[in-house]
Length: 67
Image (cartoon, rainbow, N blue to C red; front, top):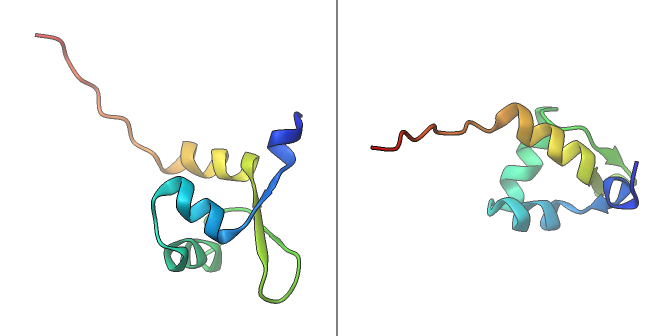
């Protein structure tokens, strides 16, 4: 495991990466759709690895045919 996989991201950082609101990320956390670590009552953190796993499960790729 590389150090980038272990990096803890804040809700704000994840929201920025995914171009979503912080509130949406908080909802995803609340619904337990992504793994996170609760470092304090108001400070959940998400590892890059957990974010990657979430994206793999929740991303659909469109297949384009060349004409």
